[in-house]
Each structure stands twice: as C-alpha cells, then as structure tokens.
Image (tube, rainbow over the protein chains, first blue to last red):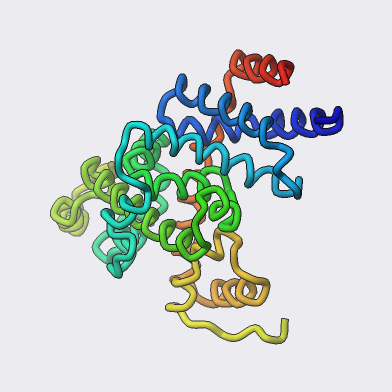
Length: 214
Length: 79
C-alpha cells in the first residue's frame, strides 16, 4: 500500500466516521457494539482496499463491509438467513402498502386542523427510533441505509448483495411496516385523537364548549 | 425534456418514494414535479413523506463520540 493509498483511506474514513457510527448505532442498537462494528469495518476495509478498483465507489463499498460485518455477526447467533427471513416476513406479499398519511388524513380529523402536520410536530425522535429498531432485520437494514444514510438504491444493492428490484421491494415493505408501527404508536399516544374521542370533541365544538388540543 | 407526459395520481403515488429518494430518471422526475405542482392531494402526501423521511434522516446523524474518534485515529496509525 502506498502513501497515497494511506492518505486517501484516512481522509475518507475521517470524513465518513459520523455516518459510519450513526449507521452502526442503529444496526447494533447499542454504543459498545456500534463502536466495535465500525472498528472492525475500518480494519477489514484497509485489508481489502487493493480489491477496490474504482475509488469513486468507496462509500458504497465501505457500507457494504459495514453491513456484511454486522450481518455476519448476526449469523453467528442466528441460524436463519436473511433471505429466509424475507420470505418469513412476506417480502413478496402483494398486500397494499400501509399509508400513515391516509390514516391521518381522514375527514373526521380534518376539522382538527392539519392532522398529518400535527403528527409530525409531535412525534418524538425516540418514537421514530423505536419504530426503526423494531423492524425485522431484513427490512431494517435497507431503511437505515436509504432513509438514515441517504445511500442510493445501487449502493444499497451492492451493500446487501441483492438486485435493485429487491432493494425497491424491501424498502417499500419496510416503509409500510414502519408507518403501521407509527400509526399504532400514534393511536396509543392519543395522537391524533381516536374517532370516538374526536367525535365527542367535534360535538362539543359544535355546542360551543371549549376543548384544548392534545 | 419534450418526452414529459402528464401522469395521474396513481402513477405519482406509485413512484413517490423513488422520487423522494432521487432515484427517478430526469424525465420521470420532471413528470412527478409537474404532477405535484398541479395536484394538491399528491403534493400534501409528498410533503408529509418528505418531512417524515427528514425526521428519520436525523436518526442517522449521531456524531461519533470524541473518544471513539481517537480510537479510530489510533487504529489508522497502526496501518
């Protein structure tokens, strides 16, 4: 390895460290494992740098190593493959995607102002984090790479070693599951009010009684 | 850009996430933008999904702790 290689590698790793760490933290779900995961990724990347022919692809390649390192750690403790998991979670399901927007954008809620904006204003980062963490691995990984790290579908396909079509279908399913979980959370938190509660508020507002928004 | 066609809500919603992920080619992207300028319902949906995606994106922005940065610097020095 030349000094140019070393300088290139150091610069890239330093520039991407926060994103590597952020991704690792959501993959591993705890700080100690996330730090070990990044350190192992950096070590493996340096050892294999000579295999990377186009250095413009460094970011996708590095995240591939990160993802593979994470998945191989998972496989040490799990006997099922990611593909089997995908099958088990109905990756090929034809069921229509769940839309949080459609649930929030119901006529009975519209008097409430702008329920979907209200939801976005009130949902907490920790609620979003819980919803992402609760996704099955096979859908959690692509959503982390796409929505949390902004990787392209091509980069995700390379990272996971799957075709582009699979990235699209897994992302669609992941977003559907995520939105369903957020809707359930919103209902539990009374955000927005349930139709029953809302109806009573609606009637109250018509009879001139004043109610605070929750 | 003369190939831009008018698209309906169904097509717009089918490609909404690819649009937000910037995965559509230039023509399809322009078709989406044209539709979103004309359709209030799809525009509202797109704004919601964009903001939700933005909120999710913030989860990935966890700066590495300084001591961990030092650990990686130490590691790089060993190579």
